[in-house]
Image (cartoon, rainbow over all chains, first blue to last red; front, side, top):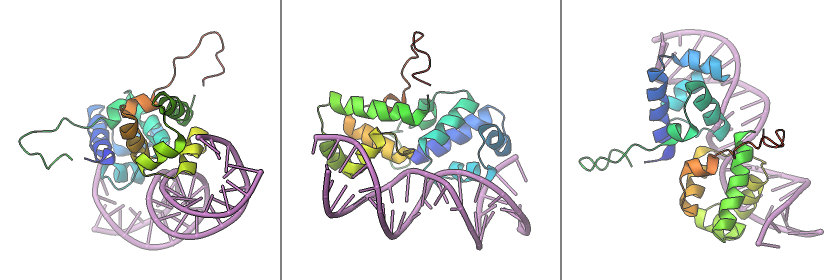
Length: 80
Length: 80
DNA sequence: TTGTGACTCCTAGTCCGTT
DNA sequence: CAACGGACTAGGAGTCACA
């Protein structure tokens, strides 16, 4: 799978795990609300400083946001 | 330090560690040579797919390219 | 072998709104 | 609360000639 897709999924998962709304996350990271929404829907290729700012607010390492999910042997086509 | 600066340094270090010229790396990653040069000089905020492509060619994890160097207590201002 | 300026083209990213 | 639209500006993506 493309890295931006993994990033989109991780962003949404981690944001929810933190109990934050898109708007709260956007505000804390100094990023536009609609842009967060777009990133989670895999619309854009985020730049590394945006990823870094988001990771900081979410309290995780950048690597955590960019990590690809382990491939599932059962349904190989879903995550590549 | 900003993440793009860390990325610039890591890119140059890892490329040289692999014994590759900018041109060789550029060719293998499907990127223009002068663009690699610019990235290593911290001219741009690279997008995550570019970082991903470079990491792949260099045979390292994306996290390796984005890792900040450990701060040196001696000269605190150099790496921030 | 790499740095740099100049130059396009297109997307990242913001801001307004409505559903 | 989130998806989504249009309109807009800054800056990334990509190439070339030349030092």
